[in-house]
Length: 113
Image (cartoon, rainbow, N blue to C red; front, side):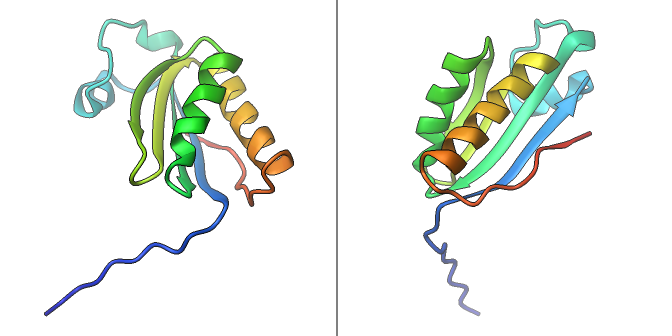
């Protein structure tokens, strides 16, 4: 069997999620900084297309709020960052605002768990 995987180029944010008060095991499994206050922490997760938008998203997030970049993949369009819940939410909102209003992206709502 042969499998071919394709991505369709588009201008969209397909996932914008906040994990509020994540358990320490999530930080460990993702390779994120374990020396943080877990009771005040949050993780922001985004996927975007084109994948290179993750680079611009990381720039927007770090300029908009006091967050730490955890993972940036310019090939899959995945961006993960950490910080306090309010900082992560601010960073996500800035990325969504810029991509929708300046670049004309289709965006999804922010979800939270």
